[in-house]
Length: 323
Image 1 (cartoon, one colour):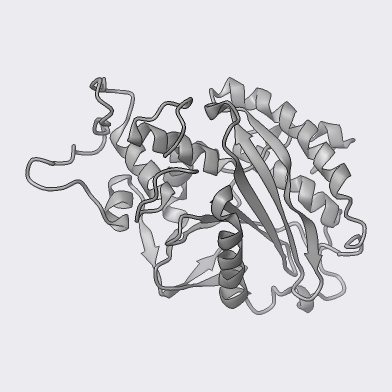
Image 2 (image 1 turned 90 degrees about the vertical axis):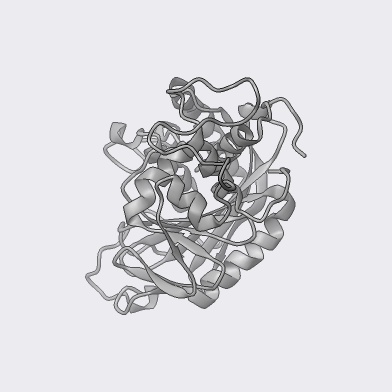
């Protein structure tokens, strides 16, 4: 992000921008966004613009669930949400993904907004029990090469939609599997054509293995604060995420559905899951098809979308350096 820090989440501000910046009405030359056609214009003459997180999201048509509380993540898991955190549930996910320039795959179960400018996206794939037999065979270089090729192909779809092109700039954290917690983690450096590939975003991916499938968690954060965000996200998941009884990885029984691929496929599949957000998965009848090259993968680039919308709010041009 490298943007001016504020009390609201970057996502929060971005959503405000969209709620106030629909293309149906001409904007003044000054960099002040106009009101959305579906929302009343803020009455700044009689009071300030919405400034709390709840007000901002409500004006954008999104309902938040605030911590401390426990939220459900589909039918397989739940998460304890601490004070200061907020949750976007199923009833508002369509709107949220629309405003962050992402189509939905149908597997999304929620979004967690932290008080420290990072966001977690949750989706659950009921692909079956994923064996971890290849945990010691994860080749980071080969995986990155395949993902880069796939992302280059996916950029053609993004350009057709008028979205930014994305580039992978290597690993921020190479793939690593924790056999004690049955969690697979990695993180990728990501840049966008929106600012001529200057600023680096990091998409952190966590795969929480369960008995009947995988909870896919994506961490979106500014690269400057990624380590802190990663630590906080790990603490949140370690202390608050649980598969419900009967869905834990250790509760596997003979005869349960078993996934047809292992951990390496989950890393590459992170791009496939995102490709679904671009509407590409309908073109494939199997998870990978006949070869890796057949997989048109795309990262979950919600962070880039958020930044683009935030620039609309601040009036910054894509080629201008951020404050």
